[in-house]
Image (cartoon, rainbow, N blue to C red; front, side, top):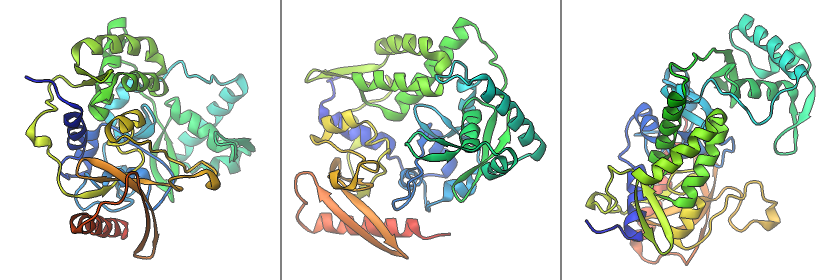
Length: 365
């Protein structure tokens, strides 16, 4: 069978993840992981991702249904939502990059006892009870120390998120079962399963992106760092691959990038910045010959794309971006195009349809 060309890989990348809309549980199961982001512009990234893959999805459905679904908030290559079954690959999470000092460990023990007594806690209850004060957060701003401690306890597997209230995590105590097999072979198998999970999520992948993703697994599974590197070496031998213009690409061996089933449709789609189609910025540039950046944390005068630019996909091309604000039920989009706006009624009609879908998506249930 002939090797796939770059056009084949591009169409395959889009078709394999923009599957026919299904139920929310099935979509999360098929994706394997949905990256989260707190910015709402005009909706959170997890909602913007799921709206293309869940039938009749509305902004906030994931948060509304979270407690009844077999999913968890946790860390993989980033923070997000994943099927609960994957927690056994990630926990107990050992060897974290920022070990706690003795004082923090004592605080965590006290807070854990408090959470167990209450059953479920809001961070403000912890702050009010323990008065931990304030600290500098990751972004350089100020956060309640109790909130940061709860985040750390969640990461270390002492707590889980049971639901959210107005976007704030509500925690409960949890105890993850020890691995059934913690031998060298058992750890190698868990690392291989995690690597397969990210390949299934983000394929096809340039070699450098595959290496980068395995490095990011150190966030979700720092205790499997050595095994993940070994799994990467083995994956390079068993995954399907092709070398095009100096770049080696990898994808699952049981998938066929040249299949006619990957033919693009005529729809326009506004994608989340972390949608699997566009998440890999290296792949983005190889596919579409321009560079996209998320500039939410870039000073406004230095932005090219805008505060929260949503990549604009038409057919099998990401042709530009949009910043979308909403006032009531009315959208206020602004557009930019990498190589000029398409002419003709077909694009205008498809864009109007997408804006109508976006409007409906933003309407509260």
